[in-house]
Image 1 (cartoon, rainbow, N blue to C red):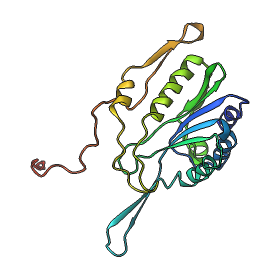
Image 2 (image 1 turned 60 degrees about the vertical axis):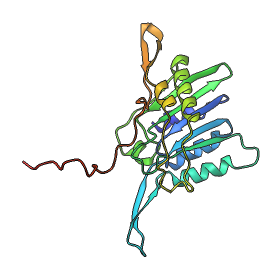
Image 3 (image 1 turned 90 degrees about the vertical axis):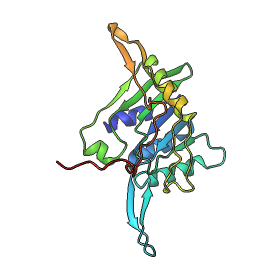
Image 4 (image 1 turned 135 degrees about the vertical axis):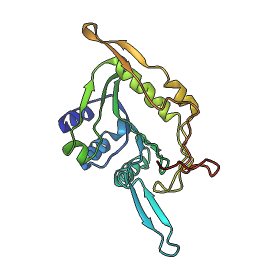
Length: 223
């Protein structure tokens, strides 16, 4: 699995578009840094630390604890003068939603050519401690579908909290994005095979459910 990811991100030439959920493996962060001049990255949040405010005793929550180090390192690269690396934070902090994407598209001068995807989170546990898959699909049609989805995500930036560790109750994904994902992308592969790609979110008008039942609602009876 590390070999597959390393070889993909080490492809000479071309350009990468990545959308990732968890990111803390140092080797993979180093690969992203090395590819930064030809990389655009959408990085979501992962991890939370709960605590308590000493003066008030109220609970506190610190978000993005898992990705914080990698985000800081990559943000430093993106902030350098004349940097070509583009990075967008996609933070759902405290909304119960997650940016569960784990893919990288590689394109050459003729367009998208391949995509790295699968169930693997870019963490040491995702690579070494869990049963995951990581595959490269070398098909222009599939890669194009993923790249267009990446662009839809990029064109739907979320509200940004003051700090990446702060709650982000305003993180609402727009209906335009959701409606664009209502239908699958289909196409043909070699040897008579076909593909069907679905993307999310795909439920227009869907909002975060209330955390508590309205007071007017009757309490359930125990039986």
